[in-house]
Image (cartoon, rainbow, N blue to C red; front, top):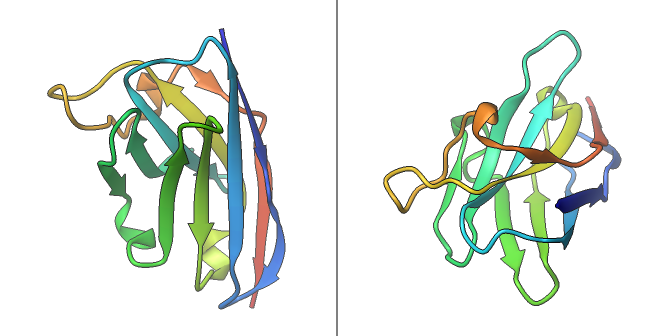
Length: 128
């Protein structure tokens, strides 16, 4: 089984930056997608950014487009999320997840139900 471990969370002021990293170990998938999700208190877990395993196609939720960048280092088995111009509404626990599925053979699913392995999460707090 694949194991995921996030790191890099913390507290910043609005407008600041953080970089999250997710290390995948064990029997990693050769195809599918890796994604970052987040969950704020009292809210549903939502997808933030996605990247195709073995490719470079990415997808983002509208609220983070232009501010967040997802990238993958296949040699290190890591997926990073660079978060710039952070806002208080970005405050949440951020989770890394992996899915063996592709939508239409080329795109990542954005629904959390399609992701079957999750990390433990890392807290991101943005103060105004």
